[in-house]
Image (tube, rainbow, N blue to C red; front, side, top):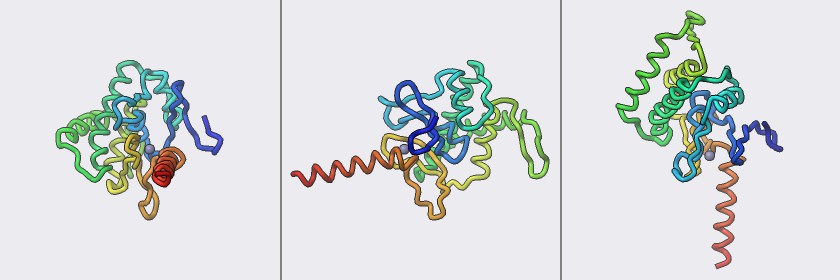
Length: 195
Ligand SMILES: [Zn+2]
């Protein structure tokens, strides 16, 4: 599960990979869709329960294999969260209807969560779906929206929290999208010189 430069990655049969780059479990869930901005390349990395269990283990969450119903719920949660946080990550605002849909989903999970600690209040979900919904709740409740970012590569679409001091992070991974961008600019410069 690692590359030669020591990064932890989860490899897929099609040659793609996942890397935990988001800085938050709820955003790691959103990033289980690769290449969102390019419909021809978009891949859902959670096609079945086994893939979910593998991914959950990779990002350090409880990894019992979810049922088909839970898998459907998990994907719905992921898309609802994406519709709310993606606009914020590019300096916009989410649609009120999308915020409301996410609120309804999260309130249901909060309502059935167990109290793990009273002050400060800590809630515990009964399974992976509930834990990720609680993580989404915490993301909205506790994180700074100004640190939400979408990777600067046009086709990537991965979201992350920029936790650098001077808020200078632009790539999901400088070894991946950052490198591809450098290579592209290098190529553009070379072809320009040759003209
Ligand atoms: Zn990227």
